[in-house]
Image (cartoon, rainbow, N blue to C red; front, side, top):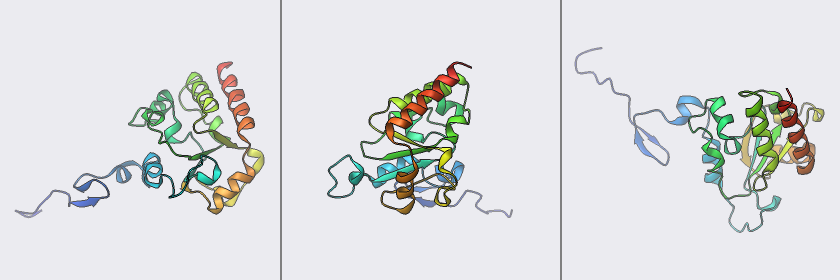
Length: 183
């Protein structure tokens, strides 16, 4: 370095926050914006009034873990989330639909009690019911990784076809929670 050279990081515009010299959350630990921010950003489409499929603004699919806004505090802590599970309380009031691959039920995060509590919490949700994509669905090319996208896109249509319905998903979640408790 030469004398007088500025060693501070360059200022850059952080959307919604103004100018900053610190890395955004995206730069520090993720490859995209936080899921909760995406849900809030998209919100409802103009004219949407129903909470049913036609009123959904966003479809969220997670392959190996529980989606951020649905995590219990213990599960979030075991994952190493900064927020410590506050996503559950920050779930926006939208008709976001959540899909989780069955693999997430078997990827242990924390101890057995943490997993049992998380799976029971998912099964009990009525504001944002979770549908499972079973192993029996096989490999579907558009579901290679987790995503959050506006409803109506092709991956969302695929999920609707291959995922279990809500009652079957709840039964599978409760069954796996019981399995963790009985270990």
